[in-house]
Image (cartoon, rainbow, N blue to C red; front, side, top):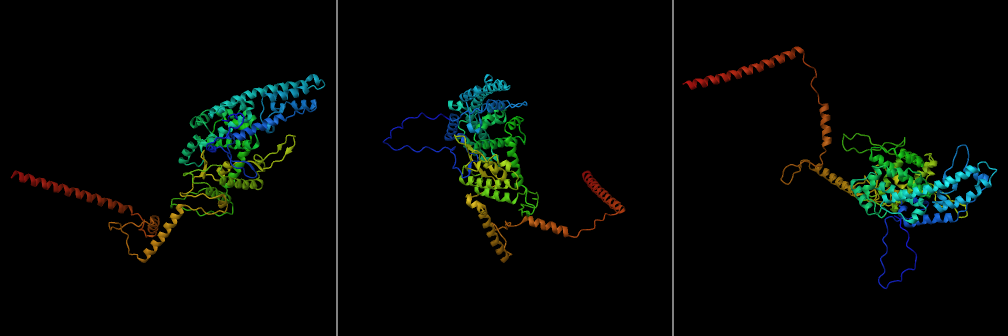
Length: 563
């Protein structure tokens, strides 16, 4: 949880002893920013004290410089009461909220209400018939925003308690920033504990250990959090409330886009856990955040591109383990195969270790992959509108002038594109990410080496080369001395380890197929009856002979006894 900064004061006098050790770096420290990108991947901004303080200071400065410019009373009245049964939201009535100003508190509501009520009072506008309704709507909006603040504070306390933290007066003064940060923390915690993609068992255990020792999720109890998220509806219902949507609208775009992707992955984690089924409460959440539908559409387009081979692309030669391995495997496009190999080369072998998502090589790879996807989306992908979820937005100067963005992208969904493009390869936990299908002895490459499409080297490849050399030497020696028989230490013949049983079995089957067979003609019924009659006669003849022998033996025995 975020704690208030220590009170300012004079620094302590220097000590005469040895200098203190440098402070340990936190695992929640933000990585170095890449050019053209504000935020890449699952950066834990919600656990960074400097970032959180900077957001609050920007909100305070925005409200300090805010000047309520009241237009012509008739124009303001038409804005508040547009007519035709339409009604604008409370925040729009008082011009509060949004990413420009950020959060707001009771003092901000009272100030805005005073400025607008003076101009819209019905006594000052007797010639405007809608003045009374506009003034009434202004009072209702003020009351509604104040009630929403209390709900937002209660929601913030609930989320902090769930994650094992507490709230501070600074967080409660304008609760929108803290509420959005804690909601993002909960989503990242659920995704980290569940495990996304292909996660081996040892990697999942290591991820749980990393989660418990991480300062990002300090005092959070994993089992209780998972039980409350998946087995109860209380936490999920909080994400479907209007207060979280208000906090979402007050956040910068880079954090809004990160929140949307994390929320979508939490939905996929529940579907994976429950056999592609999710709770009905998710419908309310999706209604509060309809932008998720646009992001899902883009994900599906990328997935289709990955698993749709080019029409003129020949089928690759597939190695078969045996003659029974006839099942057709899913084919990827040439573009996807190239990027899947690069991702596999940059990531470590998942069963051995994972690498942090803040790793420099991984971040460079994700940035290059996203630029490739964006270029395709603007062209053949026909998804330019989808990219607006992640493009950087212009800012507003203190004088009210619009300042164009300096970066191209506000957020790059690194984890999502890795999971989509490298489906079946990449696994993500609290420890980081890794390649699940990498061979033993797999060694990581740098980003530059992977982009050159170098072939990876592993211990298995070296072992296979050695085996091939030994096999070639053995075949040459057997050709020179065919009569030589391999024997064990006792001098007995030993089976050849290089004997190909499958090939011998195939040859035997083919020989049996080519062998001439006897006529399959069946004997006539008369012959069948004669043969069965002969068999019966032979059996009865044998029984009579055995009975005669037994009778003769018993007679001879009785005669000898009478004598």
